[in-house]
Length: 567
Image (cartoon, rainbow, N blue to C red; front, side):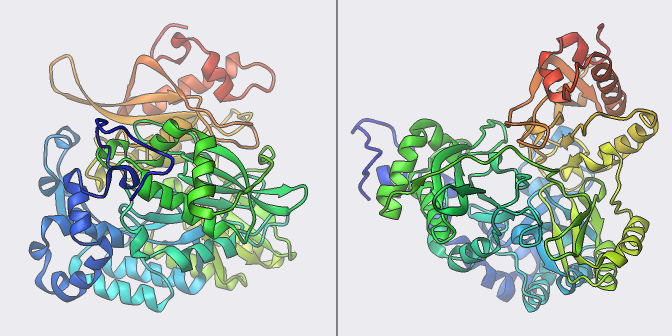
């Protein structure tokens, strides 16, 4: 391939950009991806591995291509966090898998939800988590059961294709698409068109690394658009009407970068081709040599928005996009918790599973409760919440009471509503610390300790078991990053680095921003509730009129934010 907009000199080192350097693989991952497309492993799972068992799976399929079908080996039980970075993948891996179900826009019918619940109870030891990518994730999946699980999913219109891997992963979509009374544009046709045309296409199944998409038409900006590789955000063009504002290059992990607007307006008709163009830019120009640099954010940082837009238009679209307006400031709460009126006179009910943890039993019961309330549709959200759509107003009270009985509340406490957690050391091979149970315990403690205090606004708490920020630690009011350190006696010491004052655009914050850290601030697992109580009380004592936690956290002194420090 010949570079058009990204020429390189003859002596410049190769970074693995296909359109600049050619397609010769420059590392082991790129080699096995070229030997055989990850999508091809499906048939081997059905024909061979499910029949011959775990020991028959070669390494490059087990730790590589399986991801193209939503499968990761889970962490072997009993391996503490002190060994996370010392052991190889084979040593950390159990003979069971995490399976991620692809649910674009988080949308399922009640019948599909029942199937998801049954799969959990029959094959996954009743495990199920609502992820912050609007997926359902199982654990304890045996390879012998995968073909039967796929058969049941596909019979219900569901799948796991490209749920993981170096692919276009599940699309975030507004959980109230098509029903919200204040919707700017319904993203459902756009999401469906992109999936139908491009998901499973071998030409897009070997990207430099993961590629994340978000599409919303709701004024609450409910798909965390600032931290996705490509986002289409609903706006109204003064001449062209409703459509999308185009954002690219967002991602967190160890080098967080917020997405940027290209200043381009995208019509509904243009959206699939624009999505394909941006994805193809990543495929062709993304940096493949080092996986730590193989995300779109690094290419955008070098090119800038003007060049990125020009390459998109000249090389991939063949036409210029219209300039367009930015999204208006967010209106309403993006988690959609509570009871809300739909455009058709019915209502949707949003509830808060505690840090996304549910079960097959709970999912099956939600399907039953939804149908009893006249609903056939459920949505999961990017904030680990669950919505029941199309509820008749007369059925709301009974539905809310039924959901409450299974731990899903439509009126949660501030911290139960605004706390997220990743999988953590319970199942994740990258984690140093436990997260889900810790976060749930912290919520309970804070509900008791701060019961007499009315918070002026939600304070988000995101808990992550390692540095990779699956739970978005840098964009929470309080973000906790699990770390391994050394105590004074030289023994392993597990604690959290604290990020403070981060956030995405919301009804109480105009622009996204990353949190700050305080030098030397680390909080042990046993001290998390104490620290959060301390910092919240300090905020309430010092806050100015209408000042948010995030604004205060960025002006507070290190002593104000320190654990046990003088004030």
